[in-house]
Structures are given as C-alpha cells and as structure tokens.
Image (tube, rainbow, N blue to C red; front, side, top):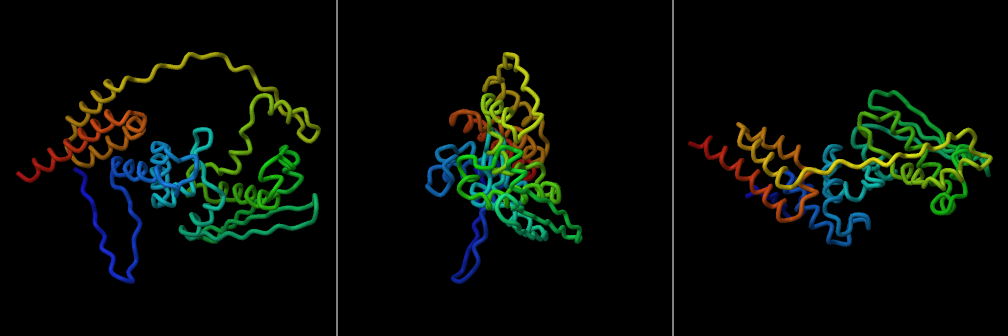
Amino acid sequence: MNEVVKVPVAAGGTAHAIVPQSFDEAYRIANMLATTGMVPKDFKDKPADCCAAIMYGMELGMPPLSAVQSIAVINGRPSLWGDGIPALLWSRGFKIRETIEGEGNQRKATCTVVRPDGEEITRTFSVQDAMTAGLWGKQGPWKQYPDRMLQMRARGFAARDGAADILRGLAIAEEVRDIELSRDEYREVKSAPSVPDIPDIPDIPDVEPEPPASVDAVLTELGDKLERATSIKEIRDIEKEYGPALMNMDDEHRDQAVEMIEAAKASLRAEAAE
C-alpha cells in the first residue's frame, strides 16, 4: 500500500499543497479532480489527461491544483495558458514588464522578461503582425478581446525566448490554439492578400500505424524489470518510465501494474529490514 503523508494544520496555520510521490498517487488525485466541477472542461471525466497535466506540472514545480488550472492539452500537446506564465516566472525570480502603445491599427504590445541575473529580453506583437498572420478580426478572442490577445502573443514570445530553461519546451496555449487550422482553412489564409508566400501543404501519404504493444506484453516486460531491480530508486525510475503506458490501460490492468510495483517495493523493504 502507498504511504500517505499526513500534514497537520493547526488553527491559523498554513496548509501545504499535496504533492504526489508516485504515479499511483498522481493518478488517484487526477481521478478525483476529473469528477469535480473545479477542472477545465477539457479535463472533465478525463483522468488520464488530468494526470498528464499534473505530472507535467510537477516537472515545472507546480502543485496538482495549479497544474490542472494552468495547463491545457491542445492537439495532444501540453500548453500553458498565458495567465500562468507570470506565476511560474515570478516564482523563479523573474520579472515581467508589459505595455500596449499606439491607437487603432498602430497598436503594439510589448513584453520584457527580466531574468534573475538582470538580463532583459523584449518582444513585441502588433496589429500589423496579427494581420500578417491572419489573426486580426478572427472569430473568438481576437475579435472580442484584441488588446488582450496582442498582450498574450508578446508575452508568449518573450517568455519562450527569455525563460526557455523554465518552460522547457512548454507551448503557449493561446498561440497553439490559433494555429489549429484544417488544410482548407490554411489554404484560405494562404489566398488572403495579407499573408504572402505561404508554401503549399504537401499531400500526406497514408501510413499504416504500427500496432501498439499488447497490455499483457507491457505487464510482462514491467514484471521482468521489477524482478531485476535492486533498489527503491530503480523501481521509482521504472514506475516513471511506464507511467504513460499505465495511463492508457483500463482500470483492471492498471491496478494490476500498480500492485506489481508496490509489491516489488515491499519486497525490497523487507529484505533491507532483515
């Protein structure tokens, strides 16, 4: 069984975030959150996606509840909402300065990221940039909150260029959402006069995907590795390695895998106690 860390909180004390110590704990938290109304609709009744967001957030130092509120899965890629960027960077000693200048079609958003060592990285995004990208006047946030979207784009560019070591390749949700275009939409944007020289999209050949490994094969392979493990650290590394595979299993096989992992830990602890 998993060890549960109890954190007593006295009246007037400070409650600390619950941080899972294993895949099983992360999945149990995700399974609980996915059934509540406190998660974004993309995570509602999707514990696997919720768990992936929690695990990705842990790599960035974000507790589970913050992760599911700040990370979105768009086109299968984890992305951080623009509002989550300041919280993440401020927690690492960065500073952010933002302004919007100009009137009408001359408006321009500017964002400066100041690294802890004082280096400044400034990026801008203007109405003209949005027109060139085919975004200006697009239905949705670009039509309803244009200044806000200019701000988010400038922030995304500055953060990715100035804090790549913190974001670690994490995409900016507002940016990824804007490039979700079908082939027909892409060609329509290509034909617009404001978007020059966009190359044709080559036809994508039909490729037969490789069949995934069977669940039984994965469990057999997992069992073999657990038998060869000689330390708790090795088992935790194996647990992390097989985390994505466990998320794609049905409940019965996932429980079986978790029991195998916990049994291997218990066996090593028993040997150490003798």
